[in-house]
Amino acid sequence: MRISIRDLRDLSSAPDADAVVVIDVLRAFSTAAVALNRGAPEIYPVLDVAEAFARRERDPDLVLMGETDCRPIPGFDLGNSPVDAAAFAFQGRRAVQRTTAGTRGLVTCAAAPSLWASSFLVASATVAAIIATGAKSTAFVITGTVHYGSADEDLACAEWMSALFRGERPPAELFLQRVRGSVAASTFLDPASPLHAPADVDFCARADVFSFAMKAVSESGRLTLRSVPVTQL
Image 1 (cartoon, rainbow, N blue to C red):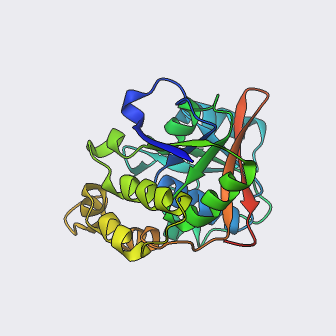
Image 2 (tube, one colour):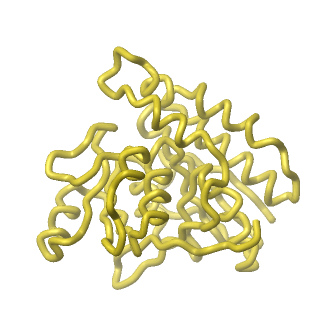
């Protein structure tokens, strides 16, 4: 497997690879994984808040979740918190997700031959799913730099998954420590910050909680994110 790691800020389209994995550990693709696990059959990643509202105008049962600059969006059902998502009744309800970094990454890379969203929660399943496709090259896209200028939490996830592709199995905890020590985490861990959400950091700093990958497919020019079960990691 040929592997590359790219920064979303440097991209205007999908990297040249058989498979592209867009990573957002804190917090978009941890939240998305929770929503799918709790019974959302599909998630529609979008770039704009207006598009999210327009979709719900057409389908009032859609769940809107996401953030702008890490803050909840007025009128949305949920922010970008995996902890809050874990308490939400998604069963059977499709969701629209809009975030500043993660969903932007998916939309930017929409033309990739095989497109995946990932976080530590689904890391091994994502590697297994991509290997099963026969892909010869994978590009990781780290997205948290859009918020903070650095995103060691996303880079750590990409580096751990790269090791898994090579058939190695280094202890996940060595990489999860970097999530807790990242610039993004420091904001959520700071009691004086309006974004104080330490439980979200703890939730996201776990490996292989779910045994499915998250594949994004383009249908009628729009992205749809679905779970792909992986029975053997």
